[in-house]
Length: 156
Length: 101
Image 1 (cartoon, rainbow over the protein chains, first blue to last red):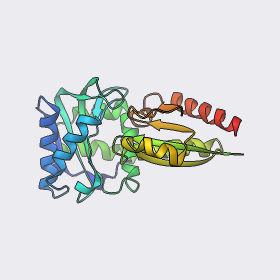
Image 2: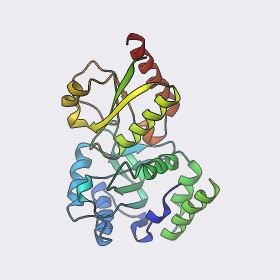
Image 3: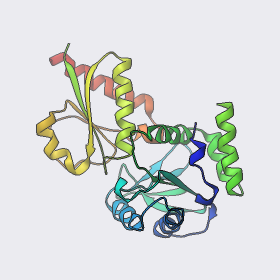
Image 4: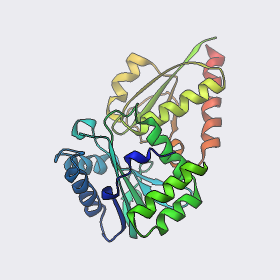
């Protein structure tokens, strides 16, 4: 399952209270900058990309978003995650003029996508698990969130 | 038997096209199709159409380039919704291609 070494509690925000996708992206990007995972140019690249090629996805249970930008802005492969207190609107990857209500955001800082294919595949598997999504949404803190993912890895 | 050529496309050519590439490759292997796959970003499609001459395009983002090449929406590889359907669509499209090769 998930490469849990990539899950850093400092990069997981639970019940984020923001109203716009820009505020969400800004908060997560700042965390990545603090962890020296990305360059300061990353946020701008994310926003520009999101405006043209949005990353909202409708999974079986909830809307998610997977914002990411060009590898040149990335220093260390990482992932920042937010669960939202109230859903926030992102535009749809499949239909960019449509919006989706998003409850979980996975901000991907990828350095070598082919090597990080496993992480992407794990995300896809995660998106299909109603049980896992529910537990993640119910987690009250970052460590619980990580434990949920760890449990699945042991059982799955 | 001929080889099928598939172009996998996403907005930036980084993350989602990698997942699509992998998904399509697995379908080809499962069905014993000889294949050639490339991935690129949406902006590159127009130029690559001539150099790569794909039989099929699988994309997670709308494509603006004009082409007669069939285009299948690859979002299912990411969202997990409609995976069986997309597999059927891809197999069907590739079989049609191979039928004329």
